[in-house]
Image (cartoon, rainbow, N blue to C red):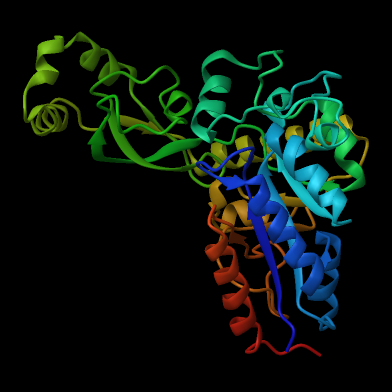
Length: 354
């Protein structure tokens, strides 16, 4: 029985490093071109709706967040193999300009040197740069420009990935304290300011998937008032937790379900409209930021998008929910890529298609 599955990438790099090396990506695309039916998300939707079995193993290729390296390195390779893919850019990160930076294809055609190509930043650095400084109209901006996004449309279908794309707190339970080395880049958004040593770390998820909890200003002000020597104590985290629990009934206030619903509807509607105006095309598919979702978010997403994609590892089957379609993350090692192909083949054998 032929399997259907979806893979997703984030960044493609010019050298071996924290994500997928472009030569590894080239090899992976060569394998897919040779042995798989590579399809669009529209075709994935068709297979599910019509319960149609593909004639050979079938895969769709997706990218999350909209990093510039997707244009510089992935786009030329996909074009070389005549493969289609989908990109889910974060609407807020797109540089609203006609800037078009050189690609691997320009290097192949001797128009630029390899060193002239963009040097990608880590996801943490790229997103921190946005949250701290906003959009920077600079050549080294790590996200796509409007012009680059449009230039890729011969290969890439463009899907939605919301506007904020940051984790937020959703609970009052203190799980840790920020110590300068244990924070997530989205804490800049979660705290509504730059995190300070001693700020409580609470459970967090994608801002769309939860009723958001805000650390109270009086709690943050109290922590800021503590002398630096306080945080040099060996057990300062234990002591601070005891103080906060005694001093405050609750350290957060939380939005209501209705407030969250209105916020999510507004963000999805505005980000979808923004993206469609940039590319002059309808945006039909959505990827949940960080893969987080709940029943309420799924129901809201259905109002705006025909399909939605998770980060749950599984193949597509006739009973797959169109708004909970699973995907496999591709790690930087080629061995993990082969492992995905093997798992998809094994799981595909157990699915029944017409």
